[in-house]
Image (cartoon, rainbow, N blue to C red; front, side):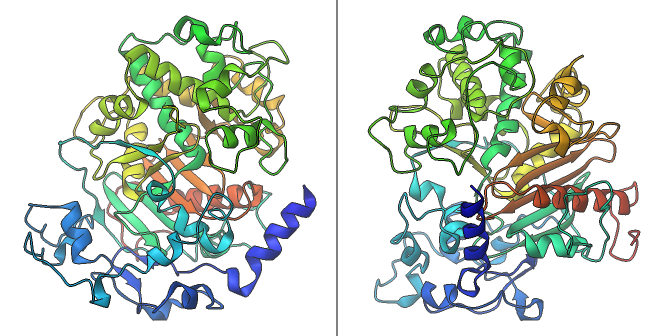
Length: 511
């Protein structure tokens, strides 16, 4: 394990493996267009901030046309969601010669090199995470036809804010500011919002505002809200046995486990989440859904895989992080509605939050949905989702998505949630924290829950101030506690620096 981690760090730190783009604000972009992807990858360092220019050319007219076909271009406004639509729409039906270099997408040169072995290689990883639908089967989670929740865009620079290193001791010893965290954690994009104001928002190529990024295990928090909504509708009862909804698991390790055991990852199922250990259960899960090369023993899809899991202890014990639990929840959602997870997630959650774009979820070749970590969304849409949680399950327009009781339970936890977490291997990393309904509660005494995904993904929700932070990353190493603590400290510093009322400016936040 240690040798593998050292290899990843050394590989990612080499000049040729550095990130392809530089972070740029929501009204800026990367200067210039490289002739080939090879020349881009070979560049020894990220472009400097001084190399950034206006990003109204960040999306091609064809992309704008595909997103808003048949609609008039949205006027330039403070929200930022219509930034790319300032470009004129091409006339429908206009043909362009294939001999023109302008219509050749340089990303094709990357796609041609990616396979099951290479999609996570550091030189391709940031790109792969924004092209999941090109690499794996996916199901769309439609946004619906309702209005989009708009954001007012500000351009605050929080990079100089200091971090609370005493509260978050795992932070890398060289990081002292928000800027340090952003620079050293393979940030693809990040955003902080409060009550409809985008306080700060930046993207690094190949990530763009209208492009989806894989959430990894932040997906689990999305699944939680689907389960919560189905619970509110009377279709699921957390106290019922899993086998009430999935009798096909009666011979598996899930026999006797309740839905609540699974929601809180307290079943007794044998499962190792060691991503870099050959033979671990998480590696076998990846093989079953064809996200890594399969071995002869691999199960055919996520559902067959789940039926083969065994129990190693009593249900309801200490917390133990198991991605398989979320896949059981996704299967339950499908069973009680008799519809694919993507359809259920759209109807009960995604179509209600004012999303601007559809989300998507990877699917295996046998019809199973890989909900434990393979949902992708845009940056702003995940913030819209987080805002709904921060507002107690209600959108800014007053539309109820989740009951107040379900939201309150996530923040408060059960009577023994903190104890079960303290007894786990995760307890020392987050003293006083807990895990409830697929959300992390990182500390005691603070109204904050987070979704955490491997390779540096995070959704941060501060209910007290209605501050929502989202960070997408492409860290070659699956888990780095330093990056997790650094990102938490970063969002916390911003939440505390911005005045209580939304609409602050760069000059008014407390440095």
